[in-house]
Figure 1 (tube, rainbow, N blue to C red):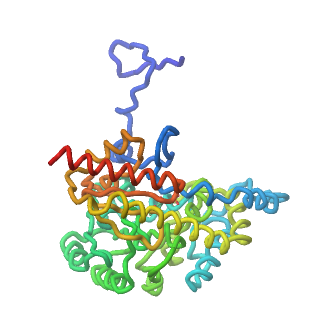
Figure 2 (cartoon, rainbow, N blue to C red):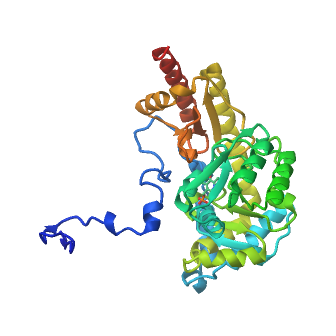
Figure 3 (cartoon, rainbow, N blue to C red):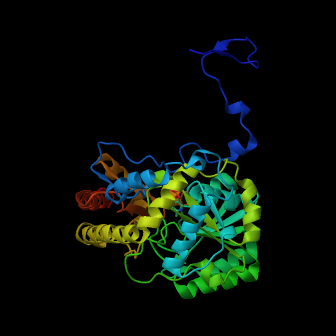
Length: 411
Ligand SMILES: Cc1ncc(COP(=O)(O)O)c(C=O)c1O
């Protein structure tokens, strides 16, 4: 075993573990505490129901078509194994443009898109472009973004929502008092809340952001996964390209999170300011070649398949909630995405309910993960995307039993 002698150790003792804590940079110290980041690794094997991570269903992962895409894309493709273009593979940029054109009627230029290592890298780069450590990031009432805020700055403020989205008065007041560096929102099939900001509210948000000069970051990871009901135009589109709104998207939900590809859509001028924060030798040209080939052949059919697959799981979870949870909690039916957001009628029992679920092998996510202040809001996020049908039914049944038992034990 390697031994390291610590120069600062007065006795000159030889130790077998190096204590790195005293050597960490300020940035490393200020990052999230270990353990507060969401694990992407999924759940252990001995679980009864995995309603935890927003992962695609195994059935959604197009392995056979990816093998075929590799056969078509790789022969003679030497650039696939060389360093890549800084803004990302042009063929994948063109795929993103085509996707925006087909699904949203949006025409964008090549120099408006940066390909990233998943949209996680996009979020990190955009936030670091706009936010200093001592500044504030405004966030949705509960937000996946809380995990990134802790890494980038010391302060996040959550804006309360009603069923249409962020409350305009609350947004206005927050901006007037605290002038956040950016408003990070997930307006469509939100993570974790499952809800969507209405068109009207998007326009109100835009007016407020313009008036206060607060840029908007629109994280649209779930835009394609639309099952029914309203899906308004993106905030980016409604803004008409003024440069106020930067938007991110991902292939994680369409193709599979393991492909690690996402994108930023912004103005060419802002793209040039964001790009210097990208120091990765070019987002994998290899993965990009496979993704581009797959998407050119299968984009529309794959997205339609996903919509059918997840709509069915959403409906199964909804039925199970009505049957097994009933009036013990409230939730709204999501029109897309991966999640139900369930608020207990007795919010103070959140921790107890979570512990009971864990003991019974049902994995769910506490609302506290999505708040910079770790206030769970008495809410639980349930992912219906990854679990097979029987796990969804069993998991929700056990969740209902856990809530009932918790209420009985705490009269
Ligand atoms: C809202 C949202 N944004 C971004 C991401 C990051 O996805 P990725 O880095 O895999 O593209 C996720 C993943 O769950 C998400 O839910």
